[in-house]
Image 1: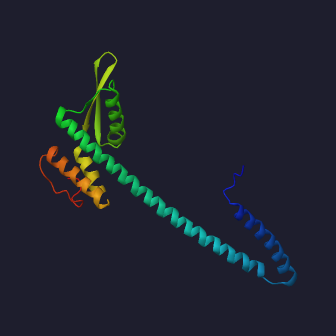
Image 2 (image 1 turned 60 degrees about the horizontal axis):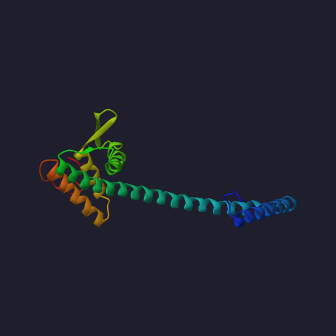
Image 3 (image 1 turned 60 degrees about the vertical axis):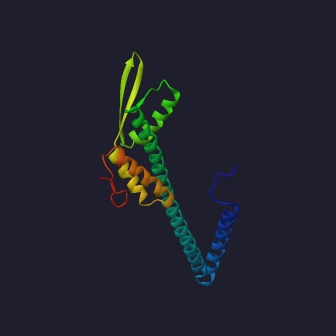
Length: 187
């Protein structure tokens, strides 16, 4: 099994260059010319230019990955806003009982998305020996801020979803309607 990061062609090319370099060094030494040095400099310049292009591509892909990751988080926040907001309106609290498998999955996802990112606080209460329930308190202003930030860089369809979430948060949890433009941000 080949563990080299170089392709077969690259390894062949390196062997050929080594052989050529040795031959040119011999000619350079015998005839007092610098053909080998000039050839190796040109090849080195080509490789460096190729490395620069590859690094630019890596940087572009990293920026794209970061943008996509940010949008995925914002879409998850949008879904959480709608789900948790609706749940809160119906039940007047966000209470999760891990004894119910569905609620446990929702709780795990909520902790990963909101609590770990400091967008919500969580409190556990023991309702009977060894049985805990969890109460979630979202920071709606912080969630709104993240969604407004994401809306500024989102594609039009996603931006419309975020605008709906911002309006829902404003009207339901922050006491009144605010401007849902991305320029306003978190207030």
